[in-house]
Length: 184
Image (cartoon, rainbow, N blue to C red; front, side):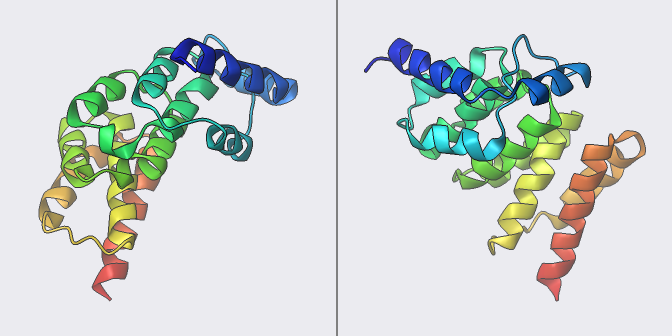
């Protein structure tokens, strides 16, 4: 099957799983997508499990301005192919905290250079990227990865806190709690 056929089949699954009430609520809440199917995360994961992990398919899905295709892209990107270049392309079109959270947990924390990407994103100071970075670093700490850049991370977080969104504040707090947990 080629990418066009796979994308078509994915969109058929999304239509079949559509939750009109949730979709309407998300649209009313101001989600900035052209289309929202209102498919819940567990169902998205089961849809992702039906399709191959493929970089081209993931990039195509990410390029759509559809909530569910972007989240599926994260689930279908092979971690070994999520390079610095791809990560930096994707970060520019990340528009919601939900994307940042799912990206941190389902993909970024699985790549070999997760720590380096996260530190770079924290340094840049963009709220969504920093949210993703904090959650990824927290996940790495909880997996037992050592972060020798603790002071650098604290410095970035301290600089971001005064103007941080609620999502970023929670991500920073979770990261700080993880630092404390691994110390004890």
